[in-house]
Image (cartoon, rainbow, N blue to C red; front, side):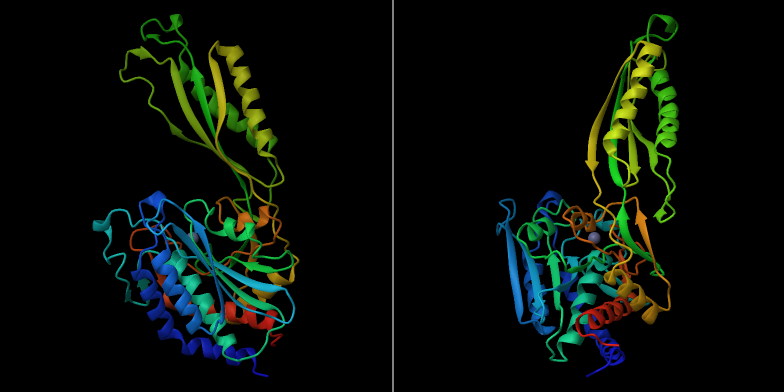
Length: 413
Ligand SMILES: [Zn+2]
């Protein structure tokens, strides 16, 4: 029986092949129709072929119909190595990217990947090419041993992560690709030293507040109701009320509290000598999972009623967007402990489970009743001009995932 250390050395020998594969992957655009692209079809063909080259014999395409793209398909590549049990260890990555934005701003053309000073530049290099290529080569090192694993190895390389997931992860969940006792890793968020394993997310609630006062001449403010003044007083009071009522401190979260931030505001009047009759602003709320976003909405509406009575203005509070978070993934699971010890073994880093305020597609798994763990090592260049991934991170993360797969699927010590 080969050892884990041999598998890890094998991954190291793939270094150049991984760089070549990531370079080839990024040359083929994979932008969703919402962003004006033709989808992932061409890239999926390459991914499927690469999965074959990485030793997968059982590769299934889960194609979601989408009339908006030329070939009417949004492909999902599911590569599996069956195990002796029906339990599978999954690594989920996504093929699609956002648009490059302003092409002139890129020093290295987004679709002509290039390695400079140990960094591979290109659109989608970090998000999510690093994980996709890394997981394929991690699995290759194990597949080449020619053993039948105890637990199966599964790679899901999906479409539509950047624009809603309905043709990607949601489609696979609805098609029962994953089973309740499977292990699920989603390497689509991380920090630069690899010390954070994301296990939970906050609810995201965007509130739109509209204050309707009474417009009048600024020289006679008493004849009107200054909506901007009411709105401004309310913003501060509202934040105090929300922070007081939903004030729990969860040190496992970054940051450790709920946050209620006024962000966007519409212009009131175009001239200086008019008292504005309308003021519209938005609050971006990130709510710890133990709270119900409905209670935040109700509290905000209660504050609005106080200010209505106080000012005579009418105030509406509406939900612009809500993303409920699923329950946090267990921090006591074999899946988490195996990942943490693999990170320690390969990188010498003590990684801790954390919650974040941002949203990742792991939440879809949590909402569907699965524990999902999000980890990778990145400089957080996703969606940036001159996006890159460090070649060392590509290779070291692949070793971490090879260690996870080796430990869980082949009981290697
Ligand atoms: Zn991503």
